[in-house]
Image (tube, rainbow, N blue to C red; front, side, top):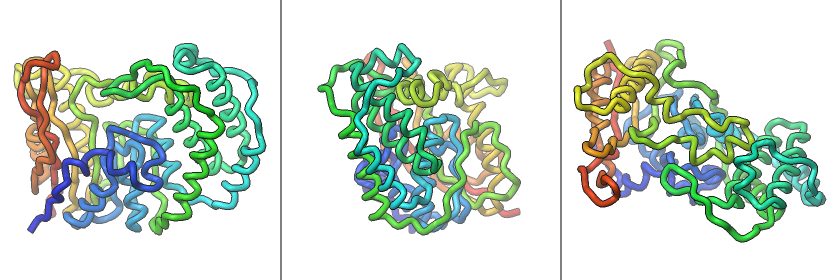
Length: 367
C-alpha cells in the first residue's frame, strides 16, 4: 500500500531544507526538499543511477549521495550547476580551515569594482567593495574545491547584504542595515565547515553539467530512475530573482531560463484556446520526456513534481497534459499524487480557478 506523507505539500517545497545541513548552503525557493527525494526513492523502489535533468541547486544529487546512490544532474543555469557541484563534493576540512584562518587575518580594502553597473546600484558602496575584495582573493585559492566552497559562501553573503528582497519571481528594492560583509562571509564558511563535520555522505560524487535538458543525449538505457521538477508553467523569468548572483559572479545577466521551457512555437494541437506560451511549454517538455524515456532502463521510473499554469482567463492543468504527452512517448502512468492546490487569481482579486501541484510517477515498460 502506498504511503503518502501527510506533509507532502511541504516536502515539494524547499522550506524543509532550511534545517538540513549542506542542503541549506544556498536557499533556492524553486526546489523541493531532501525528504521528498528520500521518500520517492524508498516508496517507489528507485534504482541508481538517478538522473535529475532540472537539478537546480542539487537537492536530488546531494540526497542521493547521502543515500549512497549514484546520480547525475543537468541545469541550464551556471549558478545552479555551480551550487550543485559545490554542495556535493568531498572536502578536506583541514585545507578549508587553513584558508579560513588566512581570510580571518585579512582586512578588506578597495582593490577594484565589479563591472556590472546595474547590479552595483543595489548595494552600499563599501559593502560591494568588500565583496569584490574577497572575490579576487578567492580567485587566488589554488585548490579548486576549496575555492568553490568559499565562492559559494560569498555568493550567499552577497544576497544577504544586497538592498533587495526576493518576492515571487522578482527582486524588490528595499534598504537594509549596513551589515558587515567580513563577519557574515567568514561566519558562513565556518558554518559550512561545521556542516561537513556533522554530515557523513557515503555515496559517490554525482556528475553535474551545465546543459539544456531538451538537448542532452544520454546513452540509451543508462539511467535507473529520474527524480526532477521542471520549471512550472507560469510567466516567471527564473533568472530575474537571481540576477545579482548571475550578473556579478557569472557575467550572465540573462540566461533566459523561462525560455528554456518555452522557446518557439509548436505544431502540435494541445487545444486551440491554450495560450501560446503553454503550447510551447508542452512542446519543449515533450523533448525532455523523450530524452528521459530513451535514457531510462526498461522498468525505470520517473518521479516528477509539476505545477499547473495560471493565466488571466484560464487554468492549464499541466499534470494531466504531461501524462498524456508521456503516454504518447511510451511511458506508463503509475500514479498522480496531488500535493497541494492553490487559487489562480487575476489581478489578485478575481479567482480564475484552482491549480494543482502534483507528483507524477511514470514507468518505462519492460518489453
